[in-house]
Image (cartoon, rainbow, N blue to C red; front, side, top):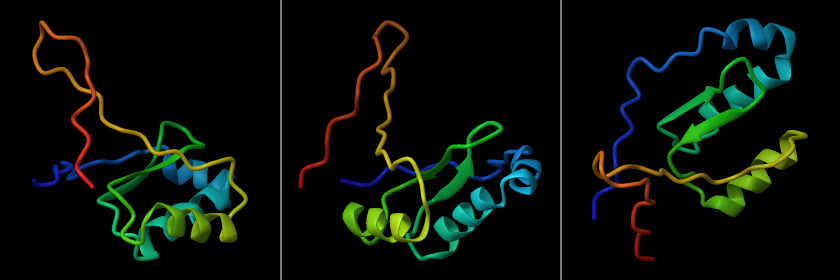
Length: 101
């Protein structure tokens, strides 16, 4: 089974720069998530803050990722989200099948 591809070209949040001026710690968190080798496809801030989200799975695994982030930053939490999609206009939203482990 192949992994899905995030179409990340052009993903921009114009509010990041001013938000990071007000809250430099958010900018530090984003830089850490981008540059620490976790292997995310994209890391962005949602809206005008204060949620930073990553697309993809951390290369080091969920527990090692959680430990690395919480050792360095005082954050409220880390949550894993899954895509919910519509197969067609007539269907309601459904979660994709879980990958076999």
